[in-house]
Amino acid sequence: MDSEKIATNHVELAISKTGHLVSHINSNDKEPSWDGDVEVYKKSGHVHAKADLILKVPVQVKGHIKPNLKKKSIKYSIQYSDLRNYLYVGGTIFFVVYFDKEDEHYTIYYVGLLPFDLKKMLKDYKGDFSKCKSIELKVFPTKKEDIDDIFLNFAHHMNRQRAAINSALLSFDSDLPTNTISLGYSTSAAKHYDLPLDYFFDHETYIYAVLPQKVELPIAHLDRIELFSFTRDAPISIDSKVYFESYTVTRSKSSTVIRFGKGIQMSFSTAQSLPTKFNFTLSGTLSERIKDAEFMVAALSAHHYEINGGKIAFSEADCANLPTLQKKLSFLLDVKKTLEAVHATADLDCSSLSVTDNANLSILRAALIDKEPIKMCSSQSLLRSCHIANLELLLWVVPTEENSEYHNIYDFNYVPLIYREFDKNDKEYPSTHFVMLNKDAMLKYCNIDYNALLDAVQHVPFSEDYSHSLNALLLEMLKAYDESKNSRIELLSTATTLALWIKDSDPYTEHPIAILNYLQSVKRSRILTSTEQAEILSLIEVAQDNESIYVGAYLLLDNPVAAKIHFDKLPEESQKFFESCPIYHFMPNGQPTISALTEG
Image (cartoon, rainbow, N blue to C red; front, side):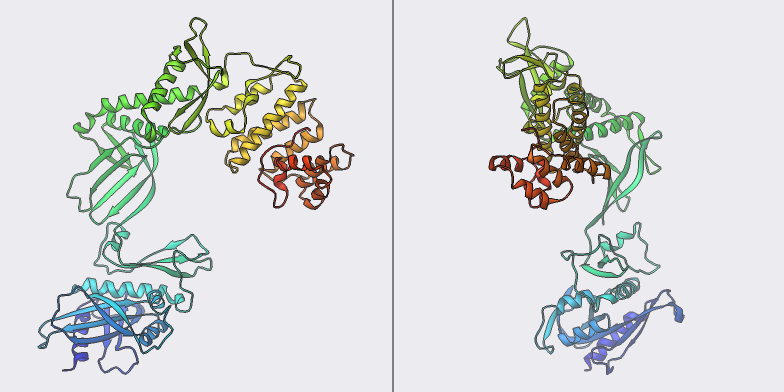
């Protein structure tokens, strides 16, 4: 019995039923690793034009008598020398045919071997090429459209992987010089998919990295996908009012789920035989929940909404939930109003609210919105910290005149008190409560209004002690900005504005120090202009009593060598102080910025 001829005949017969393929397979073929090839054409038909030829796909066929013909997959050993040859020609489809002794029953198995897979198989092999590699093969389909698809898709990827034959093997773990990836396939005209990516639920594919030179290299082989997601930019609206600008589609073989907002989704069967299911769950931050709830209230009130131009109607059962949802929205808006009253800038993480957090919210609402005195224990300090989920709030708590057990709670930024400080002789001088803030408070509390801070500090008359407090406040701002790893932009912006105002208006701060403090703040956000550099040079050209001014000036001019010379002239104690200054950040290998350059 000629096993190879029987196997070849079965493969030839299967391919002959297709419309895109023409086989040239010969069991007596003398090629070293192949039994022929299959011509793949763009168009289906009995006669094919030369111009429609896509590719000739090399094939190898093996036949064996086997009693068990019902396996969905088999393992078969292929010589490494054959695998190497398959790589050299850009790929091969390998067939194994199992049949019984009488050849009354048979099963065809196959595997597509493309450069990406072949290079992985050959990557670690350094021995005798006559040895074998065990390869898994799966059942070859019987429908002609599916057979066409195997060869069309193989030819598609064979063309795309030509550059991979002689390139290094890449993967997602490789240091890829691109952020662009692509995938694709080729299928027969008889196949139709609602979405192009639906193809991959039943077919294998490859993912490619698109390199800057427009060269594609495969980085992954997917047998099939379970689901895929994509975001579509399209309006979601109610009576022409747009609530969301995009939505996300998550699709599996059996269903499609469309999500928008934070907790809104609708799902339906891919077969469209089951009714659409609409689900809404309050989730996310306070602002996200309010946005979702406002949309849902409007949608249920209108009994519909539009997505990408299509109208989705609600049933009466759905609309029956409107009163409950309106109450939830009212509560959320009440929380928002309460937090706005204390100028909280961070968004409240509602998912982490505890019983205590809700109690604190109720207290704040009563005190700030309803203006009710709150009964609480007295404290020596008028400043209190209030914790609500992810928020830390700084508040003034002042006993009422009528009853010391009851207190009025105020937003930190707008306390109805006159704030004064004392100089070294215990003499009062005008100031503002904002100078009490230190680095830790700025990093911890989310309700400091920096516009209010700037307004307040500029309405206090200058004095020598107040000038010192202003520079100390600037120092703390720069500390906080640097320790935030440059993430707190509002701190740098406020510090820069404050430093400029001190430079231009404060008669008590030494002019060189005021210039350096302002320009080091500026240098954190951009390159200094030639005019600004000239202003620094003017400090160097004048004899300075404070050696540290030269150090700071040279650092801002990006001249660390000169800065180091003058730094070494400082006493040891002054050196330690300067190392803690934010301007030391510009010293090569210097420590991260911690404080600001100030007088003294």
